[in-house]
Amino acid sequence: MQFDVFDRVLKFMELMAQSTGATRQEICDLLGLSMRSFYRYLEFFENAGFRIVRQGKRYSFDANSPYFRKLTAYNFFSQEETDALLALLKNDPQGNELYQKLLRQKKWHVKNQYVVDRDYADKFAMLSEAVRDKRMIVMHNYSSVKSSSVTDRIVEPYLIMGSNDSIRCYEISARTNKTFRISRIGAVELMPVNWIHEDKHTPLYTDAFNFSGEELLPVEVYLNFRAVSLLTEEFPGCAPYITRKNAKEWLLRMEVCDYRGIGRFCLGLFRDVVPVGSEAFLNYLEKESEGLYARFAKKD
Image (cartoon, rainbow, N blue to C red; front, side, top):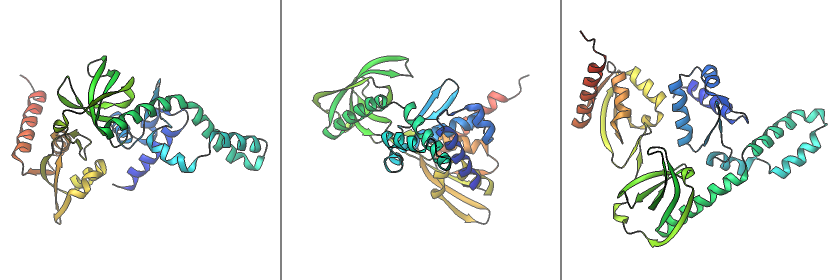
């Protein structure tokens, strides 16, 4: 990843960390991002442990995000300490810069009420207990975006996801493993019943293209310099899986959860890559290529 990418990431964080946040258009204009890249940045920050807040057209980070909570435990004053320091510095010209910084911190605290965090913490604690004790739970009033419904779900929770915002469960009625957003759970009820489907609990992997799945698929792709540069800039997690073969050629050998991530990259740079290896991956690219041709070919 080049340094200008780091610079954009830091500036994106700075804009989102303001108490008022920023609009999508403001961020795109200031950082030179496309709308598509904007949403990819949001997805990246969510996966890294940030919670995104949207108020009207403005986006910002929730101060109760797991990432910020780690930092604030060491670097921020408490609310009481902040109020005391503000009172001391209010009429001190030499302390004006510090006063303004503390005032921004106070606004940050006010914007994110403790009661919201407490509700989330209570649900997280009960989910953690259920995972530890191998207990079933009822997720009351779970809001599903996919089905546009609010229902109760009886599940066996077995894996809290890395950023602590989702939990992997085996749903009894659906007889399959699913990932649920903790913020969409109305309430958690511990059941006096232990897991009975532990043999069906499967691990969930996340690949360098941010696709998740229960199965890992091998892929191999030869890359030229242009492809290597773009791939490592856009998806830095791929870098450890790239080896240099000669002065003009590199080999990407890795496993993915879904062909769509690496497939989009290969189809977009078809002149700069040579997919090899997995027959299933080659068949996927062939099918996608035929679909693209059928969609965009001129009709008589």
